[in-house]
Image (cartoon, rainbow, N blue to C red; front, side, top):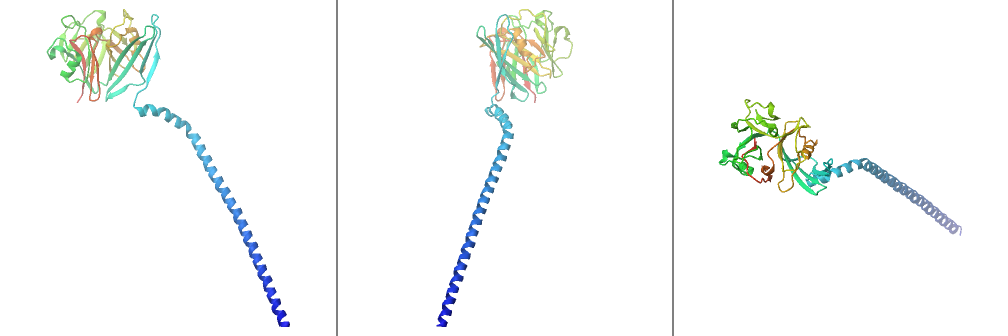
Length: 338
């Protein structure tokens, strides 16, 4: 009987021990799980803080770079399109007439040493449009010569035909001439004198010549026919000298088709002509345009205009023809140096 009691007591004692152990394990497991949940919450919160911190840094950097992005976006359309944007300028009122011009914001490169500028002139009062084309050349890259039509078989030829026969890349009409095609003032074509007389009339007030590969535009009184100039054309009048309007011009507001040659301060040569399919332009308006900073006319000489106005450009990737109404006896041509 006593043995049975002892056995039962041990069993009960063991059961209690097992229950205590089980309960202890349960409590420990619960505590572990609780700590794990707290830890998970802390880790989750830390991750969120790191995430938002990074986001905040990102947005801060984005805000700092935003002005740069705006500048890039403003410049990108013109660059990606490959087109030069136009600029509009309103001119002073001339004799009750309102004018505006639209021109390229910068010279457009045709090839090395040759640039193009196109100007549209609008007479807003009479709703008349005129187109002026200008080409600029670096004389270090081009031989500039005065050519005579008679050297190509005729007294007078259009400039496109002269260009095809001579191989020049650019050409524009030059001197005044009579009904027989003879020049009315001093002319030297490719080193040979065609007319040795320096005209004294005010219309022929300027001389364009080449000397030792360098272009010059001077007043007729300052030109010495004995100098060793290779190519010479006396024409006029001079419109601009040393960046300022010349004085004494008559009929400055008369509108005609115009052609001319100019030098900028760097010594580049500019030729220009009005498109014969549009209206003409006055010397008054022309001088205003040529003195614009974007054009830079420093010395400007008027060439024979009216029906003689013509110009032809022909390069590998560019062709332009301002067609004249009559053939001419002489022209100023540009040959690419080898």
